[in-house]
Amino acid sequence: MTLPYLAALTPREWTVDLIDEQLFPIDFDAPADLVALTTWTINSLRAYAIADRFRQRGVPVIMGGPHTFSYAGEAAEHCDGVGIGEGETIWPIMLRDAASGRLKKFYQAGQMQDLTGLPPARCDLLDLRRYGPIKTYSIQSSRGCPNRCDFCSERFYLGTGYRFRPIADVVAEIKERKTGHIFFADSNFAGRPAHTMALMEALIPLKIRWSALFPAYLCNDGRFLDLAKKSGLLHVNIGMESIDQETLAGLGKRCNDARQYRDILFNLRKRGISHSLNFIFGWDTDKEDVFSSTLAFLNREKVSAAYFNILTPHKGTPMYERMLAEDRIIDVEHIGRWPGIRCHIKPAYCSAAELEQRVREMYFRFYGYPSILSRLPLPLTQAGIASWVINLSQRKISRAALGAENFDNY
Image (cartoon, rainbow, N blue to C red; front, side, top):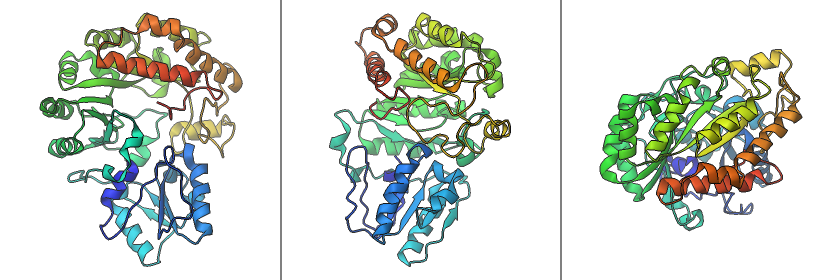
């Protein structure tokens, strides 16, 4: 949603073209007064290559996104202006300076406190026919997360406070989309449950199906979950991270209690809510049987879908600084740059190559047909169909050459 949203923040005297390179080729000869790129670290090398091509023609390039928050100096080697932080305050300044030929190398944004009146993304600038027959629009209802997980870097570029948009603004944007499918692109859709419940009440008359990410413990709150289902919850993604309580404590995942996981999953199944769980492997307290025991748990509890990640210390986090001091980061310069299953650390209980192989095997086994058929209900409901679509797409990815963790095809 980033580029369409930046287009909505752009003054009308600018003519804007949006390019999603996954679907459209870049015309490097196109007439342009300015090129703007948004990037994560995993896309950064490609972003630099694009920037270099346009700058060779003398076209100024500006760059932002999560990557520039920690790698501003590196990004500045490939562009004329680097935006750091939230774009609402610095985007118009960068455009003004670009128009007058006075771009500065760095623009540092302060954290926005008030999310009132954010404009809806300019999805009208996209060729929506290329995005498949069923359109699921991303909408942001909040920013930040009240939790302080040791491995998470999002709080550094989204800020330490949890902020949310007025409910009326969110509802108005959903109505403008004129679609029945919404994904709430929030780090934590329910960082303040009372506000989230008020929002879900407002969603009921819209008769949409929506998906989001929110904490596991809320799935033990029957009132919250019933309201979520009534308001149209189709799929929820949950960061469970580990089935071992000692590992959860080490990760700083204080809001999770592994003893409640069975009840949480029962509550989701009982209500027919499609769900996916995130897990992290590579923490020092992991045991040798963590892979087999996790798979057994997922199959026994008939989990709809799961993603298996290798612990990666992101720049700026306490975990990164600690592992850097311990000389446990294998390639500091390229950490987080490559898609696929990559281990960037020296694990305590096996080699990096062994950890990569074990996680690949987990994907292969979990998304094998015996596991899928034993876990999933018949695809007779939208939630059932959603679970089957995720499983079949992940099965395809898990058997690709690079393994998993590359969700471009999903």
